[in-house]
Figure 1 (cartoon, rainbow, N blue to C red):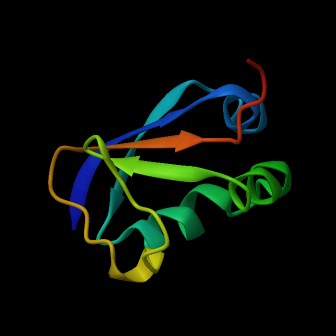
Figure 2: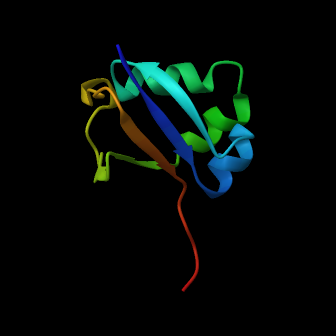
Length: 83
């Protein structure tokens, strides 16, 4: 089990109610399950989000295939608009 930090941005931050929090999870999929449990608004928002793990984009990889290392930083990035 890896421990690390998850950082929320924009609408994800509003839905989570915090800018960041600690986590313990093996994969990004497990982490998403944990952070959205009993947080319906956050669950809705993360469906539209992209993710960075230690600065690298997750892209279209299955979240259950993205293994988290101890000390990982996961960034939750909602779609941004503007110019």
